[in-house]
Structure formats: structure tokens, C-alpha cells
Image 1 (cartoon, rainbow, N blue to C red):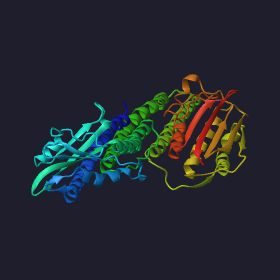
Image 2: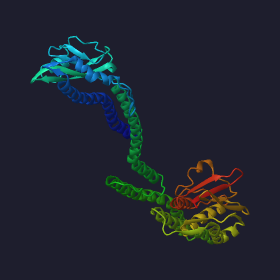
Image 3: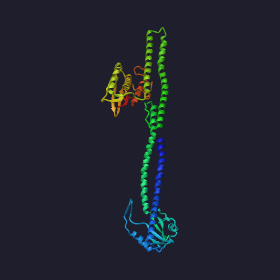
Image 4: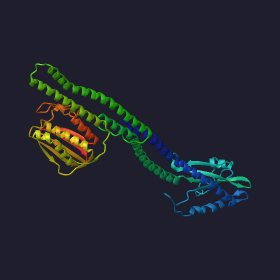
Length: 477
């Protein structure tokens, strides 16, 4: 499992789980909070109504039922049309019943249906008559929470003693509607919040893993031998990791560089040195004919030149590989650069009677190091000239595709053997020239590849369908 996925899942488990717990807790707490609020209001109302009864419905220390009817019945005949947020209220659903000191109901606002009944065992009446706070919740229908009715009682006093109780009963019908609305709002708010949590978690995981991905890409570029710039990343720990990566790269490249070049240089110089040594030993013979002596001297000179060329190019390539970026750049017009390179190779082209066809339909300008681009183009043209048959034509095409400059060099040589196609850009790998059988230093194409990478470009070499090879150098324009 990817580390980004792990971070995302852990984030969802912690943050999402916590958010879900809070939402569930809020939805489950809505109804109890509404009921508590309703009970608190009923306490105030019950005591206000009890005070009204004490003032207007008591005679000689006794509660008068007729007076209670005159006080409360007219209210139930009033018409209502109240819009309370999402709630529409058209009637009074508050029930009032009054008991005497024994708990017998002497007034019931519900059309008097329970008048005369003994309520002394109901918790609200019993506790209130005993001088305590009396309240209860009873369901009108068994096992139906929606039918719950909250009852709150207040004592009725006369001459310093409790002579009865007044109870207000409030159904939770309207409360249930408000609770349902509130729960829906909490649900949708939680859903939107959950979506935000998911997107935030994804962005958080991307933010955490992006430095790792960039450093991974940097490490792979180093592995593949491409020029790589250490990415800019925020955070002290990440910066420390960046520095460690760069130090590790320098250390590894320095060690491998010395090992690789010591081995390859030793291998490549061994053959010409053996030829020089053999020729020198033969030249010690005094009886050697002059023509053979001249032949061996020419061999010594040729192999010495080869060693010198190998060392010079190796020094150039090593200096190029040690660079981590381009130096001062300037706008370079490709067709003008190509003509300059062609002029510098005029001697080679003339000696092999080669025709060079430059095709540049539109001017193309790119930003780069002119000297390095000149060297890259010269190496490719030199390669094409050496592998082309006498009197052939080398075609150079300069085109632009999107934001890329494409340089294509085509020859009519023998093409690449299958076994060589994966090795042509390796250092010191060279194929014999078709006319002489001699090999080059094997550093030219490696040199071109390094220049292409420094310019954030690519170089490819492939066989043409008809005959010969096509080298393609792609650079940002």
C-alpha cells in the first residue's frame, strides 16, 4: 500500500472517526436538549398559573372549580395561526389539571374528562403535595416515544399551606418536528463537512508525500545518469533530507566516477599501448627494411594520436558530467548554428565527397550554451559523415513541434546492428567504420547525450526504414 494511501486512511480514521462521533452525539443530544428546555419553560408557566389560581380562584381556603373554568376555558377557544420557523401552530395543546390536597382532580382543561379521578399516585402530584418538585413524562401510546407528554406541577398555597397542585402537560408533538428538522440540518452539515474532511485529507496526504515523490524522481534521475536539480521543498526536516540526498549523490558519483573511468580508460588504452610497444620492439631490429620501419612508425604515430584523442575527449566528457546545470546561456538560432558547424566540417565532407542538405523551413531560436550546442551538432554530423558511403548525402532537418526544437540528421550508412542499439550511448562503445574498419573513441554520443540532458532535452538514434541511421536531438525551444 502506498504511503499516501496509508496517510489518507489514518487521517480518515482519526479525523473522520472523530467528526462522525461528534455528529452522532449531536444528533442524539438534540431531543434531550429540547425536552430540557421545554421542561424549564413549563416550570415557569406552572408557577405563574398557580399564582393566578391563588389570586382568583380560592375562597375560604378552598379552590373553586367554577372559578378555574372562568380563568382557563376561554383560552382554549382562541384561534391561533403562529409560524415558528419551520413549525405551524394553530391550537393550544397545553393541558391544565388541578387537584385538591388529596390528589383528586377538580379541574381538567381536556373537557373535564378526568375530573374526579385520583391522581395522588402520579409523581407530579404526589411530590408537589409533599412540598417537593414534581414532574413526570408519560407516553400517551405505549412504546411510542413520539407520544411522550411532559408534566410539570406547581403547588397552590392558601393561608401558608399547600391546598392543591396545578399541573401543566405539554405533548412533544411539535418538539418532535423541531427535532427532526434539527437532525436533518446536522446531517447535511455533517455530510458537507465529511466531504470537506475527505478532500482535506487527500490534500494533506498529497502535501506530505509530494516531497518524497520529488526526491524519488531526483534519485531516479541520478540513477539514470540524467542531470537532476535538487527540488525545492519546505520544512526543516525535508531540507535536511534534501541536503543528505545531495551529499549522498556527490559521494556516490565521485566514487563510481573514479572506478568507472579508471576501468574503462585502462581497457581502452591497453590496445593502443600494446600496439605501440610491439612496434617499438620490432623497430629495435637493425635489419628491418626501411618500408617496414616506416609502417611501424606510422602505427606508433596513429596509436599515439588515438590515445591523445581518447584522453582529450574523456577530459571534456568528465568536465561536462561534473556540471549540475548550464552556465551562461543566450538565444541561439539553429539554422545559423548548423551552417557554422557545416563550415567547420567542410574538409571532412569534401574528402568523402559528401553532400549536406540543410532543411530549415522556419527560423528556430532556443536558449542554451552556444559552445555546447555547437559541439553536440558537430559530433552528430561527424558521426553521420564517417558512417556514410563515399559520395552520399547527409540530410539535416530543423523543425519545431509545440515548444520543442527537433534536429534530425539522416545518413545512408549501414545502420545499427541489433546488438548495438541498446549500447550506442555507452561510454567507449564504438562500431567499426564501414570503409576502414577503424573504431572511434566511443565518447562522441555520450558527449551529445550529456549536452542534451543539460539542456533538458533528449537524443535518440534509430535505423531508417530504407537505409542508414537517423539521429534525433530534441531540445526545449
